[in-house]
Image 1 (cartoon, one colour):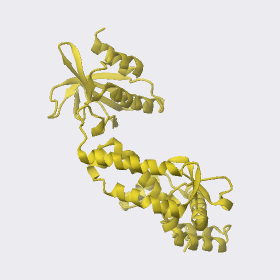
Image 2 (tube, rainbow, N blue to C red; image 1 turned 120 degrees about the horizontal axis):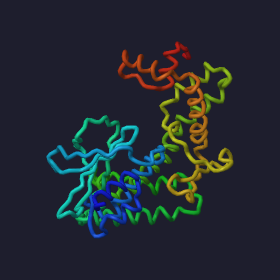
Image 3 (tube, rainbow, N blue to C red; image 1 turned 180 degrees about the vertical axis):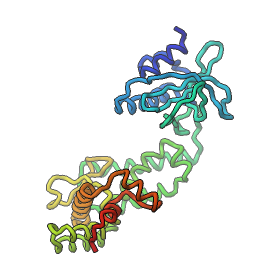
Image 4 (tube, one colour; image 1 turned 90 degrees about the vertical axis):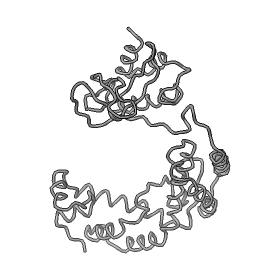
Length: 326
């Protein structure tokens, strides 16, 4: 068995350990170090294995049909449910020089593909990456931000104090240009932190609407479904309904939540109790009604054919079933 045949065999079997042994440690694959390539490929293997797919069912020869590597040969690794990993195998003097995915891959026989498996790497993961002065400065700012963030660990922090601190995190994030947000791996953590902190801020910014909604809820007869539906629909646009905050035990009394990125950081939301209430109550009733009145995908497809902007939401189901709640 040649080295190329062995590589094809172990990819087909999704045997990442044997594949790692075959690939050269001192070579890059898809312009990233071998270990980075192996980790990413193994993520795709594990994703498939979680779907009950433990090996590729077919391997078909083909070649790149695009401008970048036109004519380079490789293989399409296919699953039973028509997912395809298209890999170019670049050789030189009978040695494997590189492996990389191909977006425009032509096989010798026509195949039906429902999902092309791609592997995308950040610029700062690549072996030829050289950080600019701007990137070095940005990395330093991000390190400082997380050093400050870690100071909240193992303590209870008032939500207003936390959000006041977070204002410079939001400014830091806004000053990262769009290309760097998505092309650089080291910006990912600050992106995640900024996004998660925004949900905490919504407990403050959406508080007036939440307080009004909870007052209305307390005055309605929840056993009267028409009243309940009317309340749910009226407040379905409140952003607090779209976030499952991780509340601690007895949150109704202590008003404490955990930061989603670090459970050792506890946020005290005492002055925004109604925001926590709304984030608990509204989704509960919305999804109960959603399940009760949802229509089939076939019914929805028929309705959408006549109304392109239709969404698969509770309001659509109620209209389809001619249920009035006004």
